[in-house]
Image (cartoon, rainbow, N blue to C red; front, side):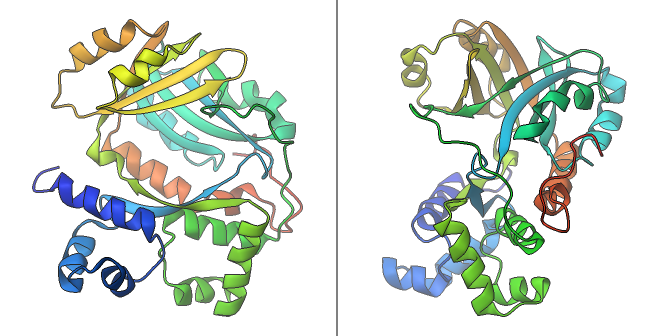
Length: 306
């Protein structure tokens, strides 16, 4: 992160958490900040190191979330990743080495296509394992899975808001060939149906270029307290346990991290956030919903089509 001031990124993240869609002038006025200083910081980092992204309730959209680990020879990593990131149901792919040497994958599957997961992953590797993953802590009474019940235009809108929720309304209206009031109505409808959870600033993975992924049959509460100074993510694996992921920089002692975290998990691997893979993932993510959904809006395409 040469030349990047982490305190300025943190400052911007804090502001955009409070005012995700407001203009810089409104933010400066509300917070009593110097507009030109805020604009300099915003122009320096926004779109490069962080972006405001829409978060959706995939359960209500009828999608199930999975994490997978595939054995792939080192000399075939890019080739396999290229093929995988043509599939819009693949959220991201990164090199990973540990209990599986090859690729770690996040992917989303329509609820009625879960039976096809093995066939999909077998296109890329003959040795893999995967787990359904929920947000932590899991709900005590999970809601029913929904379905895609929107027109195709909503898929395009959702991609735009997912990629950059601060995209000017005028540009969104031009992209969809609709008026700005219609776009506002569509966004309000997503919120009213609770499909759109909210807008949140996301720091780019380039800030953390390594991760340690662990799978544990039980979650020891001391883990979250012990590593509270690290960026840590926890997922619930129904019937299997928990997914723990720690993010850090390659400048830190990776060997020490592995030893430290291995005491709390049964399976462990190290994930690498490389620029070439980031570009593949970003290109796939930009239009994911509009390639998942049938153009007549009647539902999702097959995960085996790609």
